[in-house]
Image 1 (cartoon, rainbow, N blue to C red):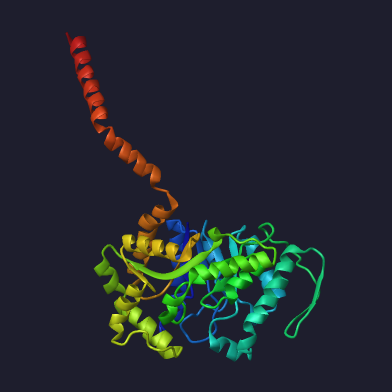
Image 2: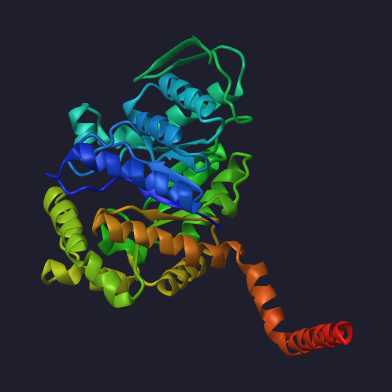
Length: 384
């Protein structure tokens, strides 16, 4: 199983945005050091919390500060851009990162973004489908492409650089609650990024993950494509500490603000918890919308997701700025030290060696004792 983050990011409105962006870059550097596989960076243009408007620019800077971690757009809102430009931006990043870039796409999540650009929300998913189809052609085809649409045109267009990765960088489609995302992923043979806890957490328990994957496979078969569960990424907010009590208390105030101030006040969502904001973290953790606790709690939470989904290949932590910098960094360290090895098998050989040593300790100690006795006898014989 791969591990990574899905970074909106979520910073409380009113904080220093320059420092917030620097903390985001610092987090990606820390994850690279810890051995996380991926970081997906969002695109948003309104509401004041998710302040990265160009994931491509962020990825360019992050790539220069990291060595191994793959960096993806999480996601490019395709209806906001000409597909020829998206294909060119991502191809350039593919070369400049030496193949560490991934393309995540979606219709656009924030109503304010589309409103400001004069985009009809009812057309966003249709335009995303059309745009992704053209982008896939630009990546794969070498002959000039002409395409006429009601919102963009191509006249004998072709990329002047081929993607660094063959035939192109990994492509993933965002999916929340409706079947449209997984159906589109299947249609184009792309992977799926499922936001397991949607922007309305009250509906999280109703998301049928197995049904979503069935729709993806059915769509792929219908369009002669192949999809793989191993490439399916599930996203969930997580905060860990050395004890369960510490984890809840570290994130309690920030989690309440995140839910009440962003989702309910800014976005106008209905309240998911009838009570003070300090109780929100307890309720949403109990519902499984968030994983709060120790590494063991996280392992059990991921296992529940495996059961709900029928199996997936990558777990992404949705980043939320709901605890202190020190506590958040420690949370990711706990994931790397204790959760990732459980699912990746990286510590299995060391554990097996430890078990072997335990089972053979009497024999080994007896041999050591004989060796010491022999050394004493040999020394005494030479001294005589």
